Structure formats: structure tokens, C-alpha cells
Amino acid sequence: MKKVLRIILSLILCGAITAGSAAAAFAAEAADPLTAPALHFGKDGRFRIMHVTDTHLHDDNVADSLRLIALACDKEKPDLIMLTGDIASEDTFEHTRELTDKLMSVFESRKIPVAVTFGNHDSENGAYTREEVMALYTAYSCSVSIDDGEALTGCGTYLVPLCSADGDEVIFNLWVFDSGDYDDEGHYANTAEDQVEWYKEKSLEAERQSGRKIYSLAFQHIIVPEIYDALEKTEIQTAFSYKRIYAEDEYYRFSQDAVNYGMLHEMPCPGYYNHGQFSAMAERGDVLAVFTGHDHTNAFGVKYKGIDIVNSLSTRYNGDTFSTQYGYRIIDLDEKAPDKYTTRVVRWYDFVNSAEVKALTVKEDESLVSEIRFRGFFQKTFTDICVFFVETFTGRKVRYPD
Image (cartoon, rainbow, N blue to C red; front, side, top):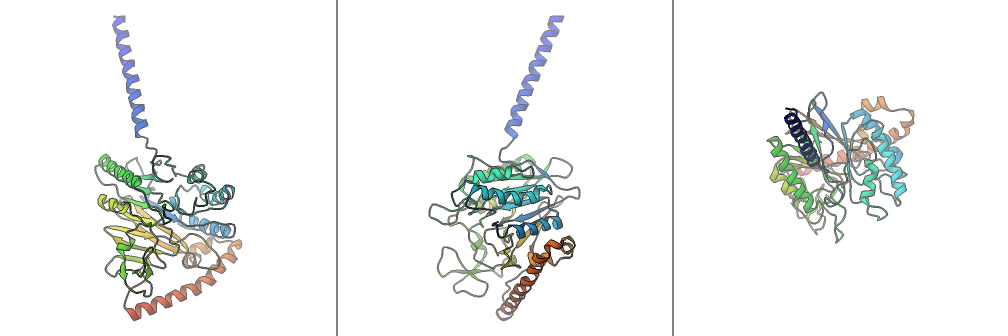
């Protein structure tokens, strides 16, 4: 009898070990190195993203820029900071580290998660690599960023899942892409073929696992080439139309037949070659919008093939220009309506004149705030006059609600 019991116990033990090994193997397989730890919707079912891009931090603008970004965090209380490139690129790695630390300390001290990917300037000087810069960001506890290593082209392509407020069900996805810097011919780069294939596979996998499409937003530095398909071509340059990059005698402006918002202020600058990213997203039908930076004064969106192509303002302050054309973007999600999102642009001039920011500012901010209000008033007035005359005399709408 004892011998039989020993045999039974041995079989149970072996089964437990085998099951444990299988579970461990499954867990190892399930831990996707290109998927960040899940974030959660708040108890109110909301999730807020602050899009910060093209800070171009240098010694002469870092103090003012970071003070404004810190005030924006305190006013908006975002659940995630999305950093999309051209952040701080100095001649030496140590100098870049110093500026990166100053920026990340703003978010670290407020315990705001940060997802970062890179732009064309973040490693173009050759003094350091994208991987070395990414290591600066991932060293912070607030960072959810991922170095995709040798798995994909570039550095900083990954997925950030958003789960329900009270559980682990994935409700929404945030795709982060490294859109590169320059191709071999010196043009702007764009998301590469292997990154596109990765997206398609992960998108299909998410749908299979959940039994439904997981709606999402995508973030990267360089705008998609399809932006010119979404705009209207004109053979001559008119007010608020802009020359097409890489082309002669082609100008583009908002199409009156499209769904637009915001305003075009400069030429959109996508990559020269198209590797099928936007087409793949349109085919999959799960991406609501692609958010980019790169074109500093463009704060606009246009719907094309069911996807909003959206550009956000440079999030810095240089002191002498663009009080009304630098700022940040807010994106709000609702757990109960994952097939929708809302967004708004906040320009520094409007920002410092808001009641909430007036209450947050301290004496040390007075000169900065006064400068923004003074310069911004004239810039805003000039822009408003130009828009009024163009829309009145041409009948074309060139500015839409943000």
C-alpha cells in the first residue's frame, strides 16, 4: 500500500513539475519584449495623453521650455506623456544626458509615465546612437519606453496597451514607431517594412485574443506620405498653400471636401519612400489617428481613409518667435467609447492667459509669462487678420476648430 502511495505521490509531483515548467514556458512566451507593461484607465474611465514633441532643448531655451511643460503637466494632469522625437541632441553625449535629465525630472517628480520614440535629429550627429539615448530614458522609473534592439529597424518601436480601470482586459492600444531619420539618399526616412509587418501581426494577434478589434492611436515623429493624398493640389501657390516636398511647382492646401481641423502653417515633410504603413493601418481598421511632430508650426488634422493624420506643435519656447505656434496637444480617451477620441491643441499664448495657469504661476514666472503675452498678442492678431482677409475674399476656409 505504501509503495502504491509513493508511486501516486511521485506521479503527482512529476505532473506538478511538468505543469509548472509548461506554465513558466507559456509565461516566457507570453512576455512580449516589444509590449510595455499595461497602463490603466482611471477610476473615472478616462485616460489623458499629453503629446510633447520637438522640444529641441538647448542651454538657451531649456529653462523656459521646461517651466512651461511643468506648468502644463500641473494644469492638465496627464496619465501619459508621449514624447515623439527631436528632444535634446547636443554635440556630446554628456550634454545630451544633462538636458534629458532635466526634462525627465519634470515627469519623474510628478510620477507621470513617459513613452518615447525618436526623430531625425536625436542621433544625427554621430556622436552617440539611438540605443544609447534610449538607455537614458529607460533608466527612469516613470519610463515605459522600450529599446526594440535587433528585432526591428530603428530604436523605439513598441506597443503600450491600455487596460480597464478595474481589471486586465485590454481596451485600447498605443502604437509607438521610430520613423527613422534619413534614407541613404538623404531624404527624410519613414517607418520601415519590418516595422509595418510587426504592426500587422500584433494587430491581428490582439484581435484574435480579444475577439474584436482593439482600437488604437499611433505616434511617431515623421508624418506619413499619405498626407499629400489627403490635401488638395493646386498648380499655383495661394494663401495658406505650401510647396510639396521633393516636388517642383506643386502646392497643397486643405481640401474643402475633407474633414479638417486646425491650420496648415508650413510644408508637411514626410519620408520620400512609402513602405506601406498607412495602407496597412487603413486595411486593419483599428487605428483611429496617427499623431506626429517634425513640422514645428503645423497643428492640424485631416481625415483620410477613415484615419486622422494629425500633426502637433513643437513643445518648446524660444523667446523671440511663435508664442502662438508652439505648445502641446492633449488627447482624451474614454474606456466606455474606445472607438472615439478627442483632442485639442494648446498654444503657449492661450496657455498663459488661462485662469488655471494664472493661479499656478509664481513670481519667478513673471518675465516669461509677460514675454509670451506681449509677443503672442501681436502674433495672434496678425494671424487672425490674415485668416479673415483670405477667407473673406477667396471664400476658402483655411482655419478650422482645433
